[in-house]
Image (cartoon, rainbow, N blue to C red):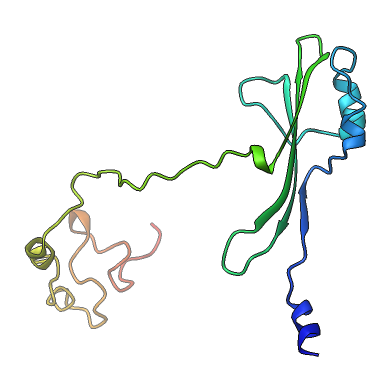
Length: 167
């Protein structure tokens, strides 16, 4: 009974991307097939090359969810179609998970000038920014800012509602 309960928590594989069948893309023949044939057999491409509208990419993968992590890719297939300017298929390539190239992350940090402060700057950095008497100087009992606004007016936010009406 304990083993059968474990199957309830087992992750189910989820298909993602275009559903690519080998029988479909093997019907495409370089030199004789065109864009319309590819659309009929495979549907719209998952993506097109960034700087070449004649390169169509179909991606299909099977993933398994992992707790507190990205889904794990268990199967991946990529079909790349290259067309000439007339729309005739020139090259058909298939790639799988073994052909994938994983980008490496660089462990260096990007320098950002002006962000390193020492302990003395951290302690003294807020001296003069806090004035406990600012709420008592305006003469109102709400403690909502106290001083007058620009040009001596008492309008705008932070003045305990005094003068916050439209002209």
